[in-house]
Length: 309
Image 1: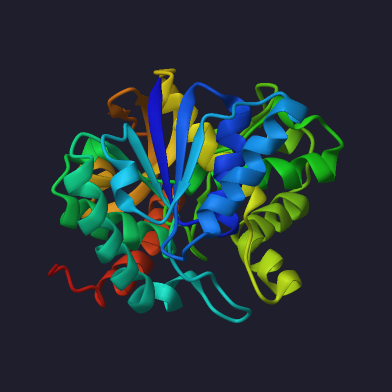
Image 2: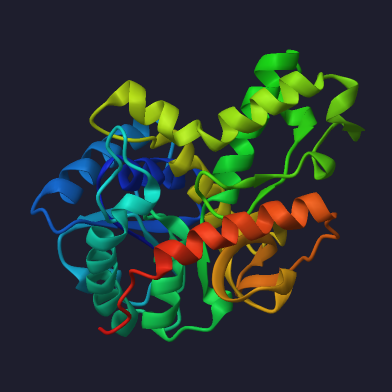
């Protein structure tokens, strides 16, 4: 059985633990530096197991030693956005947190795959890649599954069509310049334009880009966690069950899409070894320009990073 450690027992981390235990197929270790927080949440979850019919194989801890020899480490630790904050505003404080987590996790699980959740997502994934020394196939940022899921949701709301029939592709950075690719999105194999006006499509694109901020504005003291948790669990299942599923994910690029030395959201195939393949789509000039704007925003955030341990 695979061992999956989740770092950070806040709303996102504990929600991932919940989804992972419901999905089964792994032992879950939830860790948080706040004494008792992870233990309490896991105790609650395993007590739900006999009632809800899910796994009770889980550990809550404040000790990183319990993460040793993990197959997958999902890092959620960090400060969430507050109203008016962009993901990029979080870079300084969360970079220090990620450095600390990487220094604890990597020596204990040198063969693990890292799945990053902390914002600003692409920048924190880049930081984890550089500090861990892991090959790029084993450092992955979760964003595209969430953003594509949000776009599917908004299309379903506009059309009344079951989301199972809706397939979307959202690439680029997990920020205000993310790139929803309408040309590579469809409903049961048919273009979105068969069901939606251009005005509706434009509105859906705008709401997708604003999806996280919209929730922050409502919550006022926190950010999204149900959908991010489900998205991380979806990617985790693809990895530990070796499913070879294709999802958008933030990975370190070495020339793909004409980009170097950046973590950026692109379609990848996920399996037991992490990223098994990076898929390069043919983009038109408008799509290439949108991808470049997204990359420029990420690089402006990366400029504040200090990579020393």
